[in-house]
Amino acid sequence: MSAEVVALVVLVLVFLIATVRSINMGALALVAAFVVGTAVFGVEVSDVLGGFPANLFVILVGVTYLFALARTNGTVDWIVHRAVVAVRGRVALMPWVMFVVCAAITAIGAASPAAVAIVAPVAMGFAARYRINPVMMGLMVVQGATGGSFSPIGIFGAITNGVVDKSHLPGSPAVLFFSAMGACALISLVGFLALGGTKLLQRDRESPKEQVAALARTGAAGGSAGEPAHEPAHEPAREPADDALPRLDAQRSLTLVGLLVLAVGALVFDLDIGFLALAVAVALTLIFPSAARGTVDKISWGTVLLVGGIVTYVSLLEDQGTVKWLGDGVAHVGAPLVAAFLICLIGAVVSAFASTTGILGALIPLAVPFLQTGQVGAIGLVTALAISSSVVDCSPFSTNGALVVANADVADRDNVFKRLMTWGMTIMVVAPVLCWVILVVPGSL
Image 1 (spheres, rainbow, N blue to C red):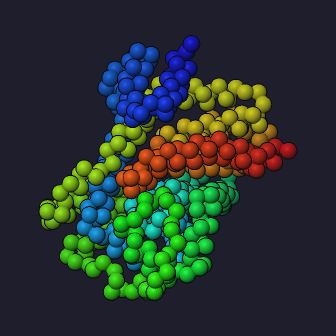
Image 2 (image 1 turned 180 degrees about the vertical axis):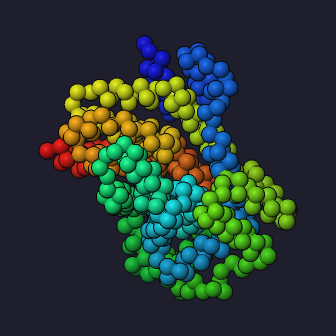
Image 3 (image 1 turned 45 degrees about the vertical axis):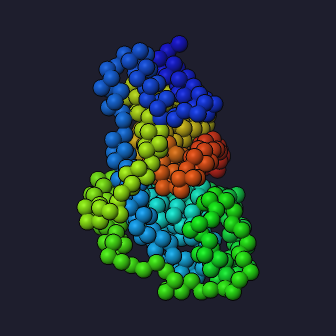
């Protein structure tokens, strides 16, 4: 049995063991990375640790630390209440508002993790307070960020179009963008309908003002974020008036300024979102030390360990050529249509656990040999590969999915992780099939 096959078998065993036994999958993956790296691939421990996602670690710690402060001092509550007033009490609109906001941010060139890091904490806080399914909210935030990233000036769009040009293949930035956005919107719609969106619409239709008033009275104390909302009590409806909102004191005002600095620094000046969030959090802690007690404990350390371990193991596979070994095997498949499908499937599987940006740059060139034969349409396959490799970013093992899990309510975090993993694995299988049928097969007929 080759080293590549052994490494892939161990990865499957990590998932099986962590599912059957109550053990952090990241801890198990770190041990597996050490054993497989040193015993199977014969590399040094330092080489294994070289795959640890330090940047992702800083992002998760920095963002969850900052927003733990913002939740503790009431800033997130203030933002959430303002959002309710802005949509006139129609809570069902908020997931779509978050989808559009993330899409707009990434469409103008912001990195997808930066957009999700800024929007997800507010979106998940809103979901927790107004009893929206957090999996649905997180799914729509990630898909919005993904779809927008394929605009001609978005990061995914620029990378994909750049690789296509470099490989001298025909391309269409418009087809890529609108296809990707359509796929992300479709996934969001399915998630919205499957995860309680119709109930939200019914609640809003019956009496949005009464519903918001009832939720405002009970949201802070009752119900977990993933539970369906109870019918509003038959009490006199109250407008969610401005005087009912949490007041802005000095601490909340400075926190809002810090969040604005985070957004501008990350989206406009392209500063590192993780270190910037840590800097803002440390500054707030120095100014208001009494309010910061216990916030470090609220950092999602379990999520950090889980994602760090899995990404370290997958990085080991990439560094040792296992992914390339898979791609080379696909390139030698005789049937171009079958090879095209396998390329899309590999892109989806690997991207669910690794960098989408890296996958887009690595797998498209693998398809060049049989694309140049003209038996498979280049635009269709490139678009299918791009979509298959990106819509799986809702997986909790990707940066975006991990940010959603880390910002979920503590009581719901395990459930959000499991449900997002289910959605991510389902999309990982379904997206390549549908993209292949819709975008690749017609181009070969």
